[in-house]
Length: 174
Image (tube, rainbow, N blue to C red; front, side, top):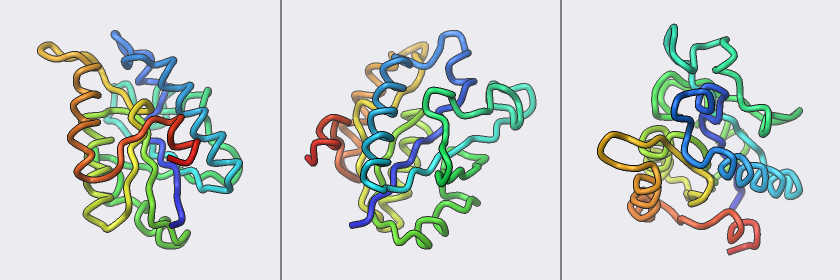
């Protein structure tokens, strides 16, 4: 199977909100580890960049909209813009995956219960093999539930739509 690494919405605005994205430094380190592995194995890396509305932390063309400098794209990487939680909806993602003959998605990013969840489920529905890196996605604490619990819950639930493995296990060939 030909794989591609998807990095969803890891943009500056997610790290400047108060509070910031949960466990942000660890998240960036796991994604850096995954991108390093992908580059060494000639795997396409696709950045999904959310176009937020005016005055939002991810407002298009604002400083917050930019992909975080710790994991910024390199020459040859692909950037797909989206306006909804679904990385496939009215974007070029599916077409680019077809062009690259990709059939296995390795998914990382932000926001666990929104864009990451929706992209995992939609990828599965489009017949892609899906692998969610269980320690390379994150979200924010909510009033009634912690980010840690949201992440744990989604790692359990999304196993119905794909594999959920740690970044270390994935880079070791799980």
